[in-house]
Length: 509
Image (cartoon, rainbow, N blue to C red):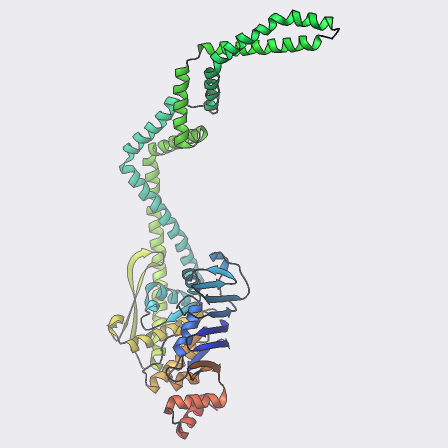
């Protein structure tokens, strides 16, 4: 639930700081005081509206899910913040995120219900209500869990089978292409480190003639060996250092000549052609190692294509068996849901009696197999489809369904924002909605703007929104102030004694 809310500089509001409790929270006040503006700013904090306030901040004590699945740090309290400067910036526990990401997170625990929202009657939600009602049925839970597991396997296996069938249509072309790719590499038959070795040979060949000429010229130094030794002897200097140097130089020249002789039989054109081939492979695959890995991968693919008929046959059998199993499980789920739906229909009609409606009909029809089974829930009111009933009837039917769903919720089910829930209703109808919302508020924290005394009187927290000299303010009211506000809602600006008495009666004071 939302525990704290702060607003700074938004339209007619300068600064607002509120603390909320669980249950039904109602905002009232004369038209134009700023109730809708306030509600819009709260919704904006969660990315559901776009109020351009300087600062909005709020705290929620428990989200009911793990923030880590969104890549955010988990804390005991979630702090939401929205700052408006040149653009809007959103934060959750001091971590920046986009409005889209924020609304995705908020949708996990907040519902903003308005007249155009018909999501309560989409098939997934209706099936969720039915399945919640079967929460204590261990056999149903086991069957549903087995169905979900096998359905996931069925979808995965079906996807693999479809891929194989698609590949099979072009199997000969694929085999021909892969064989061609393998042959191109085999024709070159590249070896690891071969490119580097050939590059080194190429370098040596390019310098062979130059090295040979240089060595030939340098050999003239050996003609002066005896003269140098003679001079050293005359100078009475040990000549061993010179002898060692001459011997080492001679060895170097001989080794170099041997290496150059080995290059005599090498065809430079062949070397250059080979280097070009290897270079082409390196450019295409990144390296010779990657080229060889690619060839092995293609060999495996070719082997799989050769065995594709066997693999396809195995997958076809698996898909067929899985489909049969999940269809049987889906039938068991349907039988359980049909019995539960009768009870849900009775409960919804029980709430509709409070709301001065009747004859809601819930039926279960067979539909295409999906992750929820093969059930489609159809809802009608007095034999009329939902799209053909009035907005007032739709609103009350939705409340009845929400009330039933709240009965089955195991814990706090989240936060509801209700838009003009009792606008343009009679006192009798407003009183009926108040009773149902009182029931729903046992499992939900509900925020509503009210124009009627009946709903306002059952609120667990009542906030009055006022505007003085163009500046709006909001604060929680109690006892006498609350009686006065409800009496104003009944009789208008000229509050009568009868309105005061009626307000006290509603509040039981």
